[in-house]
Each structure stands twice: as structure tokens, then as C-alpha cells.
Length: 541
Image (cartoon, rainbow, N blue to C red; front, side, top):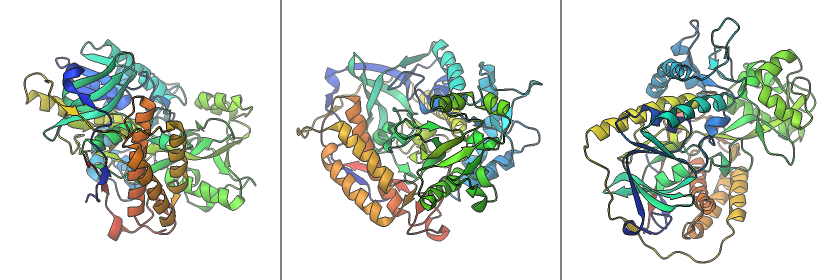
């Protein structure tokens, strides 16, 4: 069921005329250069041309910063059924069981491919893969690399392979302004290339893999590129989004006032770290029998309650009971970050608090990665696939990108085989009269982040959501009516649109489930809300 569509002042962010721009034609256009996008590119057969566009340098994506690892049944004593059940349990009743089962069963093959491409996953002394445990998992099944830098190593191997593929072209520093649509289908994208201006990319099939939206919040683990652009441009093009109320907050982010926030991996608790409050009390034992290994929603909400109870701005991770050599070997990256603040990860109490981490909602896709907009596929964090339900299980995100990247490429390839001929330019144009009053985009960006953090953070309630919606509606009326010419300004417009959709979805779901905590509706209500919520936008002109 799609709620009342959000009204937009216009379809495209900028004016253009196809007759006056440079054209580029390709078989498959992939928007996003993270793991999902590059895995999709590598799954497209070499007789088809692939163009990957990414708004920053190729390594800069959420995928690269993933610390924990990739969840996969690799131990003979583990079972697919157990991984499925762990995922369903964490998802709090909203997972699509068909998707969960298919993704989990595809995991070992995707891992084996990465190993074959030269990814150096950590190993035990006898040569088998080192597997660790993370919150919500019932078995040690997390494959990791470089201790706590799995994303960096996986992306290194995948980028090298993509750069070596002759049929794959990569455009870095290229901002995708909008998807191009004609006769109800996606036919490519309007992009802005650094030092080359705007171009129209015409594609037989387009795969969206542009990542998440953690930067909509003031405190986040996400890199600066994660502003939700792909979700926003898909919404403007008419694609349905889903689960926009579900932003996952990572429980443990290094908190040093005045500094950037640094992720402290789930695997730290997986190896046995304790969470303590300012008085040294190990409070998770009071909350859940799984203690620190409870799913992320449970731990994040427990931390926030303990901070309120103790009137303290953070809690603490305690690894002092673990062997110092284990800590140094497993978490070299985190240990170095702590050292930069004169903290010893193995001995000191490490100050942590939750921060926005992973967007569970996004562009709705089916089991093949097909969106509701013909010609458009999507994979990875930009999507709502039904894998994560109301709360993502740790280390299922890189796995989702790998699996859905392949599925999208297979679906797009099959569609192209059924439509012979070249992608061709169309006489598209967008003309409108923009607002001309000057705006301070940086100030507005800070305001959006602050508003969502206050009104749509870990805990929500009706009055705050109403206030947030009123404010974003005001911003939407005049920010989206402007025409800008820089990526920072387009990001702001995307953030305003997504903030409006997130607040509306959060107000609509009158219950508490997974990462969505409504203090005015504290109970889970399966009878009314045991379903996923769709969201859409429609342009007035």
C-alpha cells in the first residue's frame, strides 16, 4: 500500500535540452562504484558495454569502510537454516523469507568468487578461513580481512578486477543529477562530469547502486558521499521506495567530543567486549540474555536509555579482560584510531555511543533486483529488498550487495538480449522557471541533519515527527523549487526530499519494531503494522 505521494515542484532538478548536450550511449549504466555496483558490472557479459559512474573516486563508498565482514555459512557445523533464522529474528517480522533464503544460500559462491579474485581474507594458522561471531548470529560465520578492514580489502580486489575488464568504463567525479525517463521507463541519466559539464547517458538498462543516506544525520559512521542521492533521484523518476522509517543506528561509535565519529566494529563485541556505563555497570546483562551480542536495535536502544539514566553522554566498551595480543591482531585499525586519542583499546574504557549507520529503507526491488520503474534495477544499500526487515543483521550488508549485484546484472542482461539494437538519444527536455532567491546550502544542510537527529533519531514520538514534517515541508517548497549547479546543492535537495519521506514513514508506523522506536507506541503491533510501507513522490510540473 503506497501512502499519499509526496508532492514535488518538478520532475528534474535542472533544465536541459537534449539537442544541446553531449550524448553517450551504453548497454548498461551503473550508478555507484561501491561493492554492489562493481559486482554488477563484473557480472555483465563482456560483449555488452558497461559504464560505471561514481560521484567521488572509485574507492570512496560505504563498502570500503565496512569493518566487520561478510556473513556466510562456511563452517560445516553451521547451517543455511540457522543463518536464515538469525536474519528473520533480527528483522522483527518484516523480512521477506524468500529473499532471505535465496541470499543466504548464494553467499558461499559469492565468497568463493572474491577469494578467486585475490581477496585476502584472514585465515587460521592451519589455512582455513577465520570466522568470527557478531551480534544476532548463532554461529561464527563472519569472514573478515585485515582484522577490521574487510571493506578495504574486498574493494581493492574488486576494483582491480573491474579496471582490468575491457568492457567496463568508469567515470569518477561524476554526479548523477537525475534519471532520464520516457514513456514510463528509465532510459539513462543526466550527469555532471568534472571539467566536462553535463552529459546525457543513454542506456538500455540502468542499475542503481549508489549507497545509503547516513549523512542525513548529524552523527554518523558514513563517509561524506552517503547523502541518499540514488533514493531521491529514483523517487523523482517515479520509482516506489519502501521502509523509509528504518534507519539503523550502530551501537558503538567512538565518542570524543569535537572529533569525527569512528566506527567500532560489531566484531569487537563478538570477540567478547563488554558494555559498561559510567559507573562500571555491565548493563546489557539486565536487558537481554544475549547481552552485548543482542541485535543492533536492542543494543542501541539500551545504550540510549542508560545514557539518559546516568545523565552521561556515552557508555564504555571494555576489552581489558581479553588478551592484549588478540585485540591487537583482530582490530589494528580501531586500535590505531584509539591511539590517536591517547586511548589503549586493550586496556582503557573506550567511550562509545550510537550513530546513524545503515539505511534499511530505499528503492523497492523484487527478488531479481527489479524496481517498479521499467528499465531500472537496484542493488545494495540504496534498496529495500526485504532482506533486513526492520533491523539489519550484522555483516549481511556486503553480502546483499554482492548477491543483488549479480542478480541485477543477470536481469539487465536478459532484458537487453530481448531488445536488440543500440541505446538511442531521445528528444527529451526540461524547462521551468526556478526560484532565484539566494540560499545558504551549507547552513540548510546542517539544519536538515540536526532536525532528523532530534526528531527522527533512535526514539521518535508524534509531536516531534509532526514538527519535523512541518519544517521539511517548508524547506521542500522553496529548496526544491531552486535550480542549482553544484553537487553540494543537489545533495541538499536530495536530503530534503528524503528527510520528508523518512519523517512521514516514521509518523505513519504507529508501533515500535526493530530500529523504529515510537515512545508513544512502545509495543509491536503485528495486526496493524506487520507489513512494509511504501512511499512515492510525484512532480506537480
